Image (tube, rainbow, N blue to C red; front, side, top):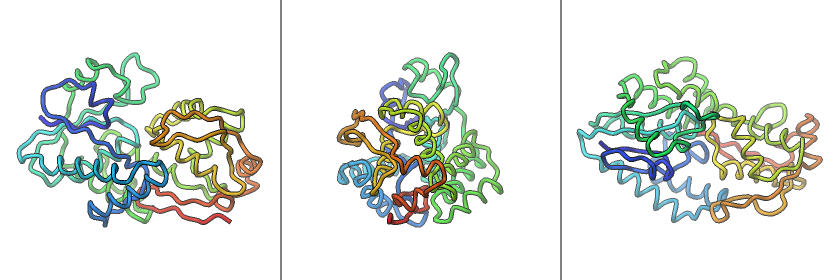
Length: 306
């Protein structure tokens, strides 16, 4: 059995027989497109994450190439178990991996849960200890052909440059995978609204900061409590905040540096500006004030600031 897990935290805890591939990628953000080959996607994403999160491009490229080689090197006839959480972060990763594995002559299994007795709120597998996590292996389920079809069509819709393809996929496709439809519905929250130019997560962050000045860690904790189906990382949250700290004037001001790859433990205080309050009150538009240069799946969201 070959186990594919999301990230090092789960990889260190999982204690089951077989080989392990630890997958390190963030398909819930950054440039994607169904027409790009593997090298083009890696290079475009490397440039994005270097700009937005200070992840060195050579490091990103090397990691992606290494894990792709491991995936391609899986022998025919293998049994593969994917350990994925219920949230948008993991479900986009699940779509990608099943899209890559669907044509291989392998048997695919999955362990995925959205709750665990005694743990509330439940964010994901990383909250479990080694025994709790490893004991879930007996509950693995073999993926059906219908589930593989859903993952493949979902990945095509998610990476399309036309957001209407996601709506069509949600309405027209069957959804036998337990959490993918929910994750794709959550994905739609990351598009700017017509009223304020904010996506729902940005709107929540501004609403929380309107109440009081907060440190980054306090804000991240509050947002995570509200958005339990997102799987937002601290770096993703910091990158969203940085976008609102740009512009002259910005929507937010920050006392120090927000976290990035080189300074992951940073914990500055964040303040609402008068312009941020105006955007919340529908008096101004975020896109007009600070612009946007972001990706939501395969859709590039771009407007230069004035």
